Length: 231
Length: 231
Image (cartoon, rainbow over all chains, first blue to last red; front, side, top):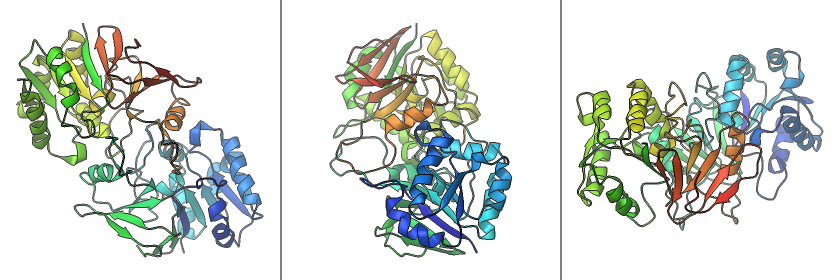
């Protein structure tokens, strides 16, 4: 049975990396002692090693070992035999590109389908959707395809936020951007606020955390769903 | 001699479409009576006709006619023989895709190189840069290439804004996103605030409007340049 946690963000304001999620993760990963970490999204362009160190430090607190997928001789084999997988945030274009270039997208999906627990944060959550077309990131590389894992039957918009009502900024809001997406696709989009995560168990998808989320369906007004909503 | 106005935004807070730019545009387009409008970026997904109507209405105020490139039988011929060109904002991926699909990117560049006055706003300004990799838009379509017109020797980040210092939001700032871009490319990026535009005359590129801009060079701290700065 599929087991995923898809978090909007790794880090909350004034908190350390993953701090708000650690109690949940301790439970989620209770049957494993090592997690294979995928650092390909390289937030801010940091190295795979530097990024893996950040993840290691966070998981040490709950007694779990982290090994970067790049530290294995064979990345595909590492994802195939992983007991648990964590794909960190950063640039979604870079992450998706690297998964395709290394021919790992199908391997990752197969492991998730087998029931290997999967944690995604930010870009790592984006790729669990049907496509990466609702990412907020810049197209710094051009991946072979925008199609992603499709572990959930919709797309995510992570770090979801409504515009500040007092703002004078005229750049497009998330809602306008998602409306543009809906002129070319009929895929629902869930705007997931920082501090929220989706808990996937087989076909059940639950909104967790204390915050609401926003569901955007094509040709409908966006609507708010409360915590514990089942998608 | 190349003649371009590349504006960060079409519209300022509490103003009508293009209002802040009209005095400048009246001067810029003084030798033409009709402008070919390219509506391919379709902001919010509106139709080519609806978008063209918005542009028509704004230019009526300064006595200029607008005709949508889609209203011509042959779009390539329309851009080749245009006396002036305006590419409006919206989704940069859609705009670039459509220009490639219709084989218009080279035609557009040729007309600009010949000296046809070109106005870009937002996505229409993005495409004057070397690549579209520093757009803020969502990848709703997958263009054949991210390479754009290269009328200026750098990239733009339009609707540029610094994060609110009181914000608790953890999504990447523009500066972080541009830093990620600089891990894969050595192209300078100019963060152009709403209300600013670049005035290109041949090889001279001047920052116009009352606001500063921010210049991001690879491996350097971003620095602020004042109005009238020559790039």
